[in-house]
Amino acid sequence: MYFRLPKFIKRVFPSLIWNIPSNDTVYLTFDDGPTPEITEWVLEELKKYNAKATFFCIGKNAELYPQILHKIRAEGHTIGNHSYSHNKGWGMGCERYVEDIDMANEILKTTLVRPPYGRITRAQARRLSARYHLVMWDILSRDYSKVVSPARCVKEVLPHLKPGSIIVFHDSVKASENLYHTLPITLKHIAAMGLKCEAINL
Image 1 (cartoon, rainbow, N blue to C red):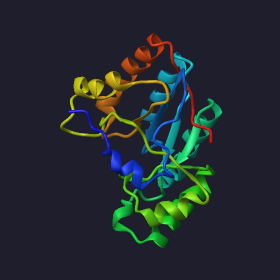
Image 2 (image 1 turned 60 degrees about the vertical axis):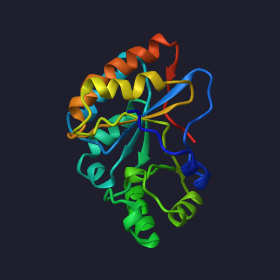
Image 3 (image 1 turned 90 degrees about the horizontal axis):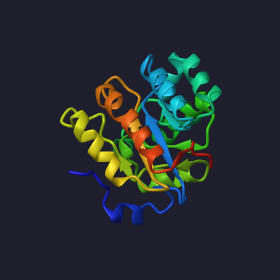
């Protein structure tokens, strides 16, 4: 079953970015890295199609692997902020949540933020929107799920691709089996549709 956020969520959070209007471009994004070997594999796959993407990095991972963070930028991709600790916003006070994002941004230095798990309160969104662009998605690959097979992961993405889509993958160990299967197929499909993959720059 295709996972889609209820429409009322978008109405409740009008400042969040769910897609980016375009006639010829889609936006691949990767959450939870940088992760040794996996992020570097993603970069090599993107290079095969001259595709650019946005990597929403966890601050503590970026702190551990600054060389991978540098490589992402050096190859023309964009860095986003996926918090320092990867906590769910629903379980944190506003001050603490904003502090965690800001702590990550001391390392990541970006205006793009994606809330971990997509869980953020209205108060947190209001505070962060004053200084950051909050980027969500309209296609979630569910590559991280143990109940989603590689074949199912492909079906979560390909039928729903359209110009302006923001697609979420994860460059993490947990998601790697589905990612390794689905990303090459997705890149080939995007090229066959005559679409470009660009990084998000806001």
